[in-house]
Structure formats: C-alpha cells, structure tokens
Length: 159
Length: 98
Image 1 (cartoon, each protein chain N blue to C red):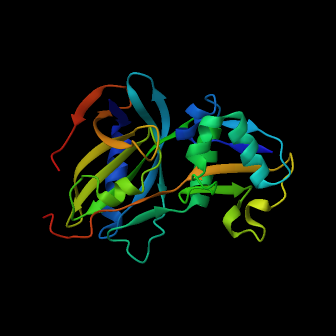
Image 2 (cartoon, helix red, strand yellow):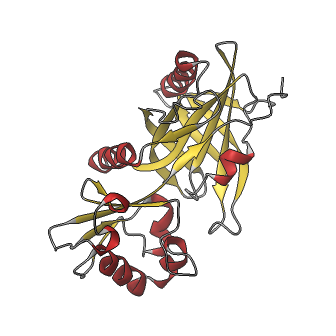
C-alpha cells in the first residue's frame, strides 16, 4: 500500500513541524481511499495541539476541531483519510503512545522527524485491523506527486 | 436524529457516512444504530455497555460527556449526532533515540 500526496501538501506538513518545533504539530489528511491503491490526499488541514502541558512529546486534536474538519471534508466531497504529526528530535517512527492512541482503522498516520528545527524524514503508517484487538501499523510508501500528477519520488526513510 | 459515521466505522454501517435513526435520547439513538448495524456495537461500546473511552459523541456542537444528562439527553429528529474517535499520540518519553 502507499499514500499519495501532492508535493505542495507534503512540503506543507513538513514545514508545519518546523514551525512548531520544539513542539509537536498535528493535522488531518483529507482525500479518498482508492481500493487496491491506498489513500490519496487532496488537502491537508492544520490542527491545534491541545497538549500544551507536554507539547514536545504529545499531541491531541480537540474533538470539536475534528468535527469541524470532518464537516469541511464532507462539504468538499472528501473523507478523513489520515493524520500527520511531528516527532521533535525523535525518529519518524511510530511510538507506543502513537499506537495506543490510534483508532482510525484504514487511515494513514504520517510522522515527520524534526531534528534541531529541521524536518528530516517523513514516513507513513497505515492502521490496519478490524478493531482494538487486532490493530497494527504497517509501513506504507509515501508517493509525492506534482500537481500535474507527475511522479516525483517515492519516500521511505530509515527511522 | 441523524448520526454521522466516521471513516473507519463506515464499513460496519453499510458503507454509509450518515444514518437516520429513531430514538428519544442520545443513548436511544446509539442503541438503535447498534441494533440496525450490530457489527458497530463492539466498536462503540465496551462489554459492559459503556461508550469506549476513545469514542467521542457530539450532539450537534456539544460533547455528550459534558451535558448535564450525558447520554440520557433528549434528542429529536432535527438533531445531529457525530461519532468521532479521538486523535492523539506523540513520540516516546525515553529521550535516548538520538
């Protein structure tokens, strides 16, 4: 499986992590799931991190903001297909906290490592399974596309 | 009332992104939803019948958990209920990765 995202959105979510450094950024990926292919991102929406008590290593999106974004998605004909956040001075690899707090099966969780304020690696993990009992994160390629659908690169960094 | 179904649960609700159900209260509407789509029940409720801790339910713009009558709050056909699983996480606490 892979997640497809425009170069513009890919750069924007990485820049978001640099802007909020040393705190974690977070946001929502809107688009469509393409059967047999994976999630395609058409729009990213920045969200606020409500974990002001521990923003350097935790993030949380307020449910009220999620509902607003879901309404926005519905109005545009998109679905929520994933989320993104940053790991300041930590690898672009999901943590036990990420896993424990992941409940959106079929959605992509993009993580960008930001080292000393600079975005380094961006990886994506597809949450698979049917529920809490059998859920799992699977690596998925990040396919970055130009607006004209020209394939730019396939990202998969080593965490 | 109309219940909005989040992306990960639509596969258990006939692929629908919203469902109209009967019910005089929030709890009644959710019960009706789980009756019509039984596969949803395990995703919404614990074995004890309580809403799972990561499942947020909003009645229009209000978090049901903070309403005075909580899930027993009255609801009508004109109301909208939104089910929204939580989004959270973060990098490890043991800062020995680099």
